[in-house]
Structures are given as structure tokens and as C-alpha cells.
Length: 234
Ligand SMILES: [Zn+2]
Image 1 (cartoon, protein in one colour):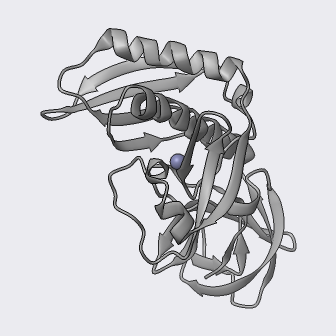
Image 2 (cartoon, helix red, strand yellow):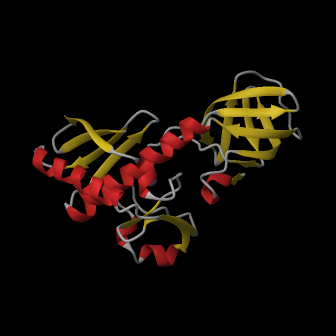
């Protein structure tokens, strides 16, 4: 399993790596900051350069435990030394949307008692699904007002590790009803200091002011008690 550099430093944009293996246009590196699509968050794109030869990363996913980079053409080979770079604008938008989603789901879950059932985050917008009998618009608007208050306080975001045992003792770390990941000995925790913490493998901004303004962009009913909220950033 390659080193997932984005777990240590979400702001790392360029790094050196070695090609471990290739299969057609699919490339595995020994270390990578390309985030693979997962947990409702879209993937990173960017470039893998071998000397002056540049390959575009058009998709990043996780397959059989490996982070796999799909490039625009074949040609890279195992053992190649490469220089990688993220499309930073896209990644930074994903980070802002992801942290914003933690703010909103923290409010809906911790303060309003709603169960989060899913989410999807792209560079353009965010979506959060939660369990609620009927759409309560005043409550949702209150949630966005509360989010603005938290962003206004510019709370710091901290990332650290907890052992499985330590994490299991804190039920609040697991908001999504996906069950506890039994095979992982150490969990990565993303904490909005003074507000919320959860087990998470994604990329986040360092403090809430970086998110900007979180704007309610729509709501939708998805099934019997599934409510959907869409947001965008300004
Ligand atoms: Zn997350």
C-alpha cells in the first residue's frame, strides 16, 4: 500500500515518487497525494511527469487497496522516477466543500439529532442526506445560520490518530451509518476544535475561515424519510 501523503498534509501539491506498477493507463506510485474517490468525495486530478514527459491524471481511485491513477496515455513503467503535481484549484475547492460538509453534518447530527445517511462533494457543490420525517425548512435555515456563526469564529481544524480502542469509546466519531471499520488498527480523526470530531480519511482546510460563505442551494426529498440539502460556497 502506497504512502497516502494527503493524510499527513492536505496542502502538499508537488512531490517526487516512483512508479511501482502499471497496467495500461493505470499507474500505482510508492507515495501519492492524489486523493482517490471515496467517502462521497470526488477524486484529484493533476500531472505525473517523467523528465519533460508529462502524463495527465484524469481519475484517481482505490482498487484492491491500491491508489490507482488513470493517466491520459500509456508509457510510464515500473521503476520510473516521477514528479507529481495536483490540480490545486480543484483540490482546494474539494477541501473547502469537505470541511463545510463536516460543519453542516456536525450541526445536523450533534445539535439537531439527525442521522446522516450520505453525502457527495464535488469542486462545485456539496450534498448531504439525512434522516428526517418531513422537510423542516426553518430548521435547515437555522443550521446554515449556525454554520455561518462557526465559520465566523474561524475554528481550527486538527488531524490526529487514535487507536481503534480509543476511537471505539467515542461513538460521536462515527456519524455516517456505515458501521465501524474493524480492519483498521489506527483511525485518523478530523476535529473542528471546540465543535466536532469524526473518523475521516479525507482532505480538509486548516481553519473554518478558509471555507468562505456556505450557501443553501436547494433541498430535495429522496425516499420516505431521506432529506437532501445542497450547498455551495461563495
Ligand atoms: Zn469527511
